[in-house]
Length: 217
Image 1: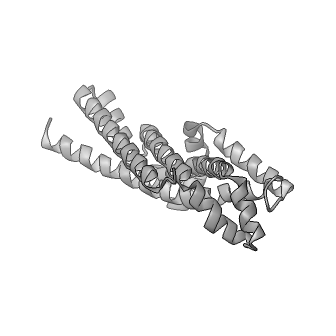
Image 2 (image 1 turned 90 degrees about the vertical axis):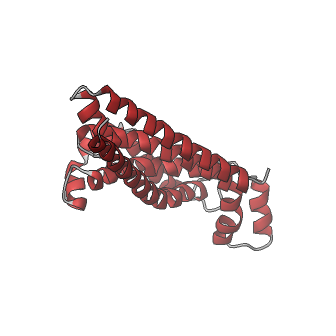
């Protein structure tokens, strides 16, 4: 494999990292608060708002139900409005973010549901505010589950970023399609696969270590 191809693989790897880090960060910034809202506004929670919860849940489910490849194409006008282009690494961040944010919100909601209700009731009996219950009780107790879920979400972003590469999103997926498939260079395709496996394994290993470190069990 030539030095030029090696450099292209490295550049594509960096592009994939940029896509995953930025979309994962923005998606988490959107998804975590939405997940908290889904939980606390449930009719059986401590800030019941059934109507608001139903609307929010419906919107999140609607976005989650759209396959990523269709979402990628459907929001091209919105992507152009945000970043000025529908191709490239920056453009891929927009659909990746919209795809992962609802997923993260459901992960957070599920993790919060697993927190012992007795802890919430104890905090309420001691006069804790709703904000204190969320910040001091729910999130710390649910953190292992949230981190574990975020690890899964980030790994799913890697797969989605490779899919985005198929229509000009850049990154390892784009390189694998253009060189490994279209130019019949299997060594490039297998190198891309190996790099993606390494990346996924590294993220999973790091996530598992963090979960074990913060777990109360």
